[in-house]
Length: 81
Image (cartoon, rainbow, N blue to C red):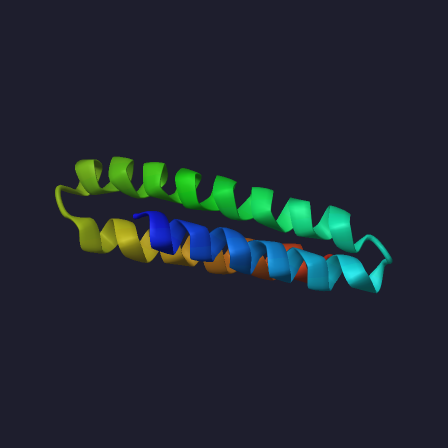
């Protein structure tokens, strides 16, 4: 859905800019955050679709997708600074 996709990209860009600002690379952080949001959204959708087909239902796939996103975010953010 375009509105939620755009919102994710904007949120990623803002988050990336905030992290990048700490290291004086605000613009690079902005673009990296937006690119990460695009990759995460599209990759997550593909992963979830494949898992849903494998499980025969969406709930287990959704929970796995959320877990992967949470762990990845924690790992990436813990490496900053």
